[in-house]
Length: 344
Image (tube, rainbow, N blue to C red; front, side, top):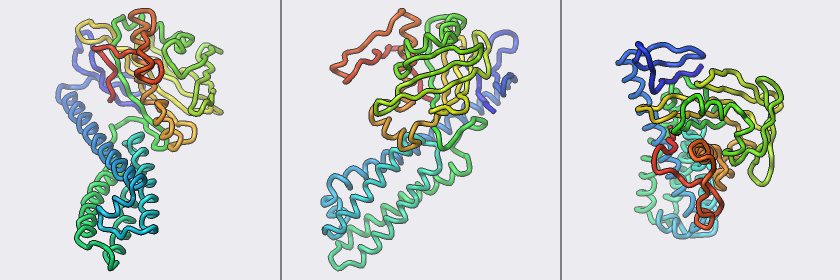
């Protein structure tokens, strides 16, 4: 079941509404305020997860690249065995860090950090017994790890209890979730009509090679994947409200299991249409595949950012404006100064 607050309504019932399944129910002022506060709280906790992910990367990189310097900094004896252990720890931190950044609402990655913290404390305990260790530095490092372990444990417990996720939203921990919004200076009917003709999608979706309509509600998709691969799947429309919503899901046998929706809402101040895309996606190769794809700019979150900017350009100017490839490494849409994509 999806529970989302609409940004704007029209008519006598002008208060905010919640969409539950396929219908809408009015929300009172206090409910709308509580929903906004809850959303802000969830975003704050997600930033907490991402901060721990970046912390893992900041630990992993020096452990892999410069284990000798890290050994000296922590007071651990600088020998070949300890340098090897530090490299292994560094690889673990990099993997967990990328996992948290790509799936900040997944408890599994935070519990991975907690398990890694326990291993680090055990290794530091062994180092304290060594005659060649610098006891004061090892003690300080141990205290720091204890503090970080407490933070990791708090966040892991929050996610395990569902305290870090928006209520009512369908989520698969083994997959990925993307939610983006952009404002397009066209009417909802015009924007909906262009998107609903799926043959238009490859014009602004850089990873799509082809979409073939094979029925009233079914279509066949072919897309680019990391490492030069291609993936294909059949999809069906599960909900279609002209000028408002298109929702879909992939069918059995898909190379990439996915589902999602795109909503078209009148923007405040008659500034066009807010286009809100929500995507649930199971990447080829699972989490490892998503992590590697993210390094090469092919992770779904990055894809949707670029796709929506290109969509805005096509709708407003009739074409995609390419930026300087020498600056960005490959052609991608110039970012508009206003009404940019909003991550949520």
